[in-house]
Amino acid sequence: MNRPTTIKLPVLDLTSASPKKASIRGRGRSGSIVKVEEVGDRSVEEVLDRSAYVNINANWVNAKGAWLIHVVLIMLGKIIIDTIPGMTQQISWTLVNLFYLALSYLMFHWVTGIPFENDLHGGAYDDLTLWEQIDDGAQYTPAKKWLFSVPIVLFLASTHYTNYNPWVFAMNLSALIFVLIPKLPQLHRQRVRFLAEDLSGMATPITPSFPSSGAHTPVNNVPGPADITEAHFR
Image (cartoon, rainbow, N blue to C red; front, side):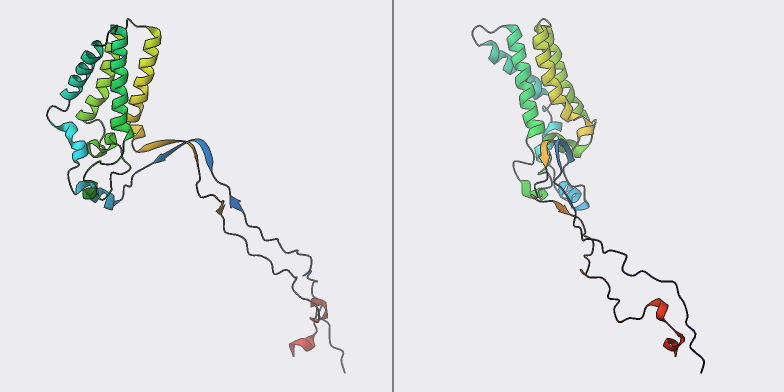
């Protein structure tokens, strides 16, 4: 009887590979000193809500007399401030300029939403300022050009009547820049947040790797590759 021929196969090391430890990584809360984010939804539903009715909160800027009211308010404020005893022209023009810029910023760039009949638009303007609502957000319109030029003209007038005092000039210029920056098209629907961070309170999870079973693949009582003979194929 012939002895079965042994088939020699290369030895496979099944125990050398060590299982990897399961690791669950997380991305920590994002935090930054200054953060710029976009507000407002540009979906079809929001566009339909805005166009459903006329936005009377911003439509008045194109009405008759809306442009002239700025000049009237400036001159009225100048007359009232001049009635204060001991008031000089330098202080008077500086106060008029600062008061107008403060009210303009508060009205056009600070308050958001519609103060009345907001339900008509389904809250589509809740996150938008008055400046962003004017002319449906279009840029370089006549109304926005007028509102952009009035603070500049008032700044030039106050600079002239304050005899170009360097300290007053620096104060008026700083206030002017602070009011004109939100009017730029590049900052349309943009919000600058200071010390903004993730408010979730926990790390954002990332899909973890599959944990190991805790034991190696059993190899006992199983013939190794070197012990396989022709009898195993019969």
